[in-house]
Length: 266
Image (tube, rainbow, N blue to C red):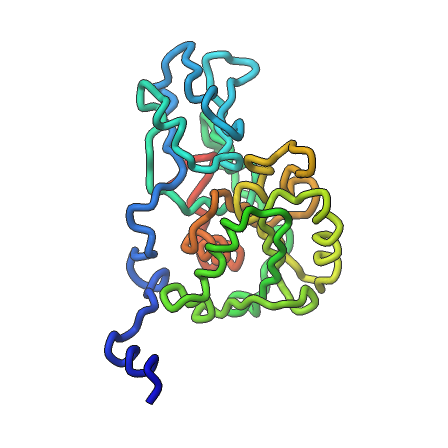
């Protein structure tokens, strides 16, 4: 009998029951996006804005006393948390930030009760149980790729959810894009999208794919997927952890609800 079979029999099942049962996603103690409490902001303070390397924090153009926060630019580096003198920004374990609308990654002072717009195309029942993904690295640092590789390890075992990676865009339902979309990768990315059959969907995975990240505006870098492809799910993070990636895929398949609305994590 092979050694790996003996090992499996001795140690039992390694795969997590999440998300089918229990809260254990394998991310206990992992820092997520900073939590924002604008009522604690000190008037005239700019310390968090000055240390933010991706301009996720900025001063509102019409109200100098008000901060803008765009989680789509946040890389969860925690520099703003360390710099904030009043704990208006605090550390959290909120990592599930997949949303269907890019605007939901912007902090909103007041939430409206209007119903969110549905996906660009309704996801058919066929794809509720099966999904094939074509991944395109459009200029990543390989941080997101490391997390993607973990999806197929024994703990996460993405196949148990009926989700698979495919080498050809012609067999893919979803285009999963990482990286800031460098100028060199723009055309290959568009070619991969055009090769996909309808219906087709797009997931922007990682802050670089959402907004360009740290490299945005560089000499060879783009600004992510906004305005380039019709994105169905936006997932910030630097990088998003495996559980966040799984949650984003389940949001796409309408098997899990988004946890963020108006920049506020439930």
